[in-house]
Image 1 (cartoon, helix red, strand yellow):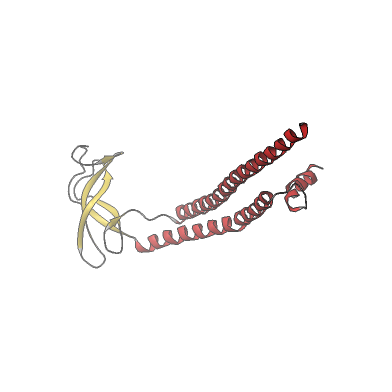
Image 2: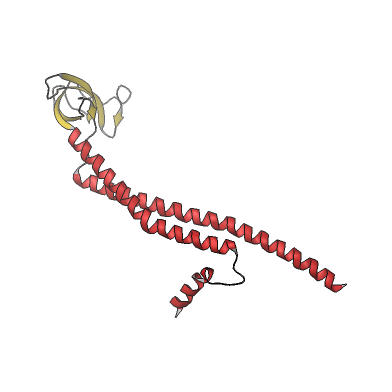
Amino acid sequence: MRGGTTISRSLWRWRRNPLRRREDVLEAWILVIVWFVIAVAGPVAGVLASHTAAHNAAERRVERHSATATLVSDASSDPLATGTTGGRVDTTVRWTAPDGTRHSGKVPVDEGMKAGSRVTVWTDSRNHLTTVPPSATQAGVDAAFMGAASSFAVVAAAAAGYYGARVVLNRRRRAAWAHEWEDVGSQWGRAAN
């Protein structure tokens, strides 16, 4: 019973009615466009963002490779001498790239490691140190999150656009009502004479 009244209440803007204004028809068309954007653009944005995030993660996994590096010095626990982050210390390491060139750089290692210890580092295609690439599971989670966030952003933007348009249309309706009341009020004053 209520479903029928809800539908009939939402469709009143489309019926011929002497009280219907241009603003009412415009609001109805804006609402149709918003629902179209939510139904089509929201999912499309989510799928595209998810695909892009998954593709970027796959590129990082292909581009980055691990190498075994050797600590040049002891991992000092002095937080003023080196950057300490949660039991890890930035320490200089050296490694040999797959092309045979030798490289060095600073990476965070566990505190207290001795010089000569071996650690695994990750490098990019130019043999610069980089972060660990995301695992397939982490890439899937990130892609799903990006897809959901993008879809939500489109839906939120469409809803905000609708409510912004509705505020403008309500102002126009109120101004039209005020103008009509002024006309009616001036007629009432004449009729009383």
